Length: 137
Image (cartoon, rainbow, N blue to C red; front, side):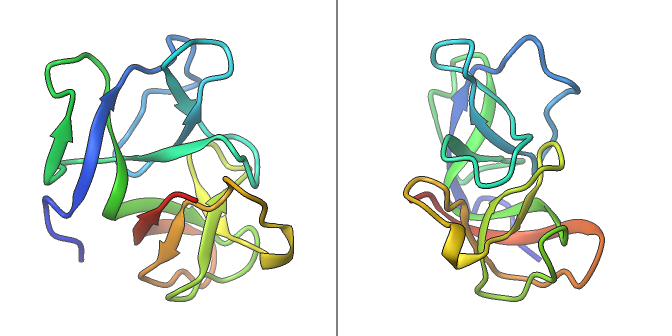
């Protein structure tokens, strides 16, 4: 399991119209309605993916600002779903249709800006949490 302090994160303000409160492991995207803000992902292959809500980052930028710590680099426990098939170590991950979750990508559908990172764990079915090596591209 991922140790504390294995990511670089930044405190980023979040939408005041969230469907539910942000939780550690949630996948977030750029808020389309508010400047410099994030919101929960809710559509697959979202090119506005911004990162993953971190629990205790190793480095936290803008620590004095209000917001949530969003991991942009490093290893982070992440909510994942097998809605696009089983996730295996090394799979490319993108946003899923499930609110706040990532899924395995079909490489043929991946376009610039959609990649969240790579799976460092496995999920055969259903939903769960695995460590993801965040590598936004």
